[in-house]
Length: 376
Image (cartoon, rainbow, N blue to C red; front, side, top):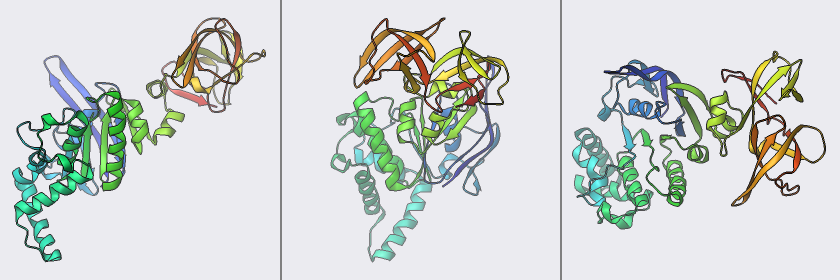
């Protein structure tokens, strides 16, 4: 099921004035894909999710599910499954009853599944009553997320990762058109977060349900999403496949938001077709960039350094081993620091003088307002 935002805005009124959480958002979430809404806290990504769910009404615009405009449709009519950051499990109910809850307690869902039960009985020559049909659905959902052995337990008897899977099973058992995940991994420790995000990806591929995943963690989004939607202050910054957005950011904000360590940004100047750093020519600039002060972006892994003169001169300040990689900090000749990645074939030590170049497509120029000028 495709989801489409059409000129969507959301404003909240408070005693301090009006706050625009989402501003004229136009974006398409492709059917059957896992799409991550990504941005810093307060950027509008969770508000966007809640508007898909119908929890927040739109101030302006429309949201479409396929060819159906759902803007005025109440949440219970949208066919959406949602997993919240805190899981929202009922502590007094068993895992089974938590998963079964929407099938038993929602009139709309019960009506839908009663019709499905009748179709199932006709097709299979069965005589299941609703209680047994619900048990069949719960078992299927539990097996999908691999918690079928814990159906008799209470949530307090499960690990954080298992509780998360219960919440996902409860969302999936309704057979939603859209699955919404609001910061679903933020309460897990680092090891469990890594494991669970891979399980999420596997589940999404198995079901083929269009899934919207909200996170402030760019590593999560880059690792499991088919596409990412980067938002800042309620305004769309860039949409695309994660690697494409990482490799070719649309502006300085996207470049700095994505990547660990963050991209190196330092001052430069375009003059007569050349890029000057600290007053010295470093590279030629592609045609079309006018003479002006610029911000230069080069990712750590895009720098190369040599002992031979040529390129941008720098002095090694520190060398730090970080697991499988070695991080290097260098001071540019004339001022400013950059982060590099150690070249194992050409190791450098503190105090060494090196000359920096950039790999093809590794240099990005931004104007003083953060707009992108060129990349080569």
